[in-house]
Length: 88
Image (cartoon, rainbow, N blue to C red; front, side, top):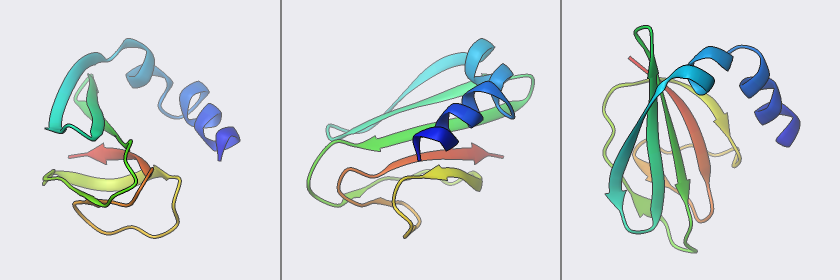
C-alpha cells in the first residue's frame, strides 16, 4: 500500500499533489479531508480517523486512485479507511 502511495505522489499525480491548490473539506469531525486542484484536475483525499463507519457526501467522483481497504461503498468510509479520489 505505501509503495503505491509513493508511486502516486512521485509519478502520475505529481503535479497536482505538489503544485495544486489546497482546499480543506469539512465533512465531519472524524474525517480529515481536502482537495488538491491544479490545471483543471481535482483530487480528494479522505481519511476516517475513527473506529466507526462515517458517512460523507461527495458527488463528483470520477474514479478511485487509492483505497487502503479493498471494499468500497460510495459516500461511506469504513473505520480507519483512507481514499484518494479523482474528481470530475
